Image (cartoon, rainbow, N blue to C red; front, side, top):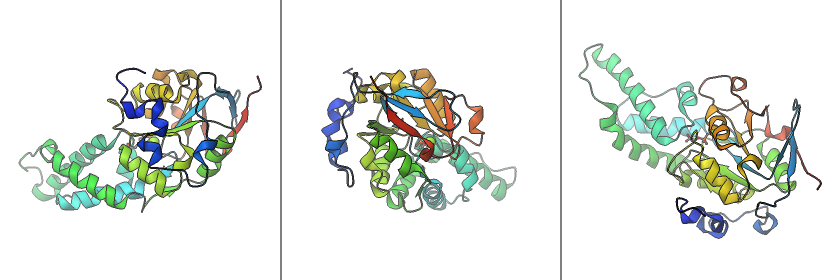
Length: 286
Ligand SMILES: O=C(O)COP(=O)(O)O
Ligand SMILES: [Mg+2]
């Protein structure tokens, strides 16, 4: 295991606090076997696939792929903005900004709402205040509010439980790989009863770099002990696709998530799904 992988993220992480704190409720963890280089391949297909994929494990994105979290983002951001005496942000703006981690979301929203406030309050002659000067306060406020409401305004997308169940039944080891902070991701998966499907959960603060950098995918494949080319990324945005291409992983994209306001089919991928329930998974003989 390379020295740059935090110890709790190594293969031994299967039995570390991440898993121990999230004991499966419906599926016994002992029924979910760990992947290794000789793990059996699963053949995956979906409607419109000219050719399916032979894979040994999957990494599944969280926001926009499994869970519609726009409501949570909206409430936490607007409570933060109210504290900072800034105008509320629209759901549409959030949907185009989410996906690159909390830091990027807070910085972008702060800059936009400060710009709007300066236009309203002082027309064109406001004294310039740098968003960066308010970033630390905004970050603390946002994280506290998000922690309080996490999952209360979120919903699992239609077809997600069915799709994950199919992959689980086919014997596919899975990790949740998100840019959401680790603690929020773990709590959300638990609250929505999705944690049971994942041997591992890696948040945006689990590695030194986030998607679209390939590092989180390469380290997750390493932790799952499957080669990147046999480790599928299942996501909703160009972040996931870009990271997958750079890591050498196959990638499938869902059409209903948050792709920075751009059509998902314009993003290069091995395939596109309108619902995870469209997936067909079967063990590959031999
Ligand atoms: O940016 C976030 O917080 C979440 O993003 P992801 O779950 O789509 O990776
Ligand atoms: Mg996403």
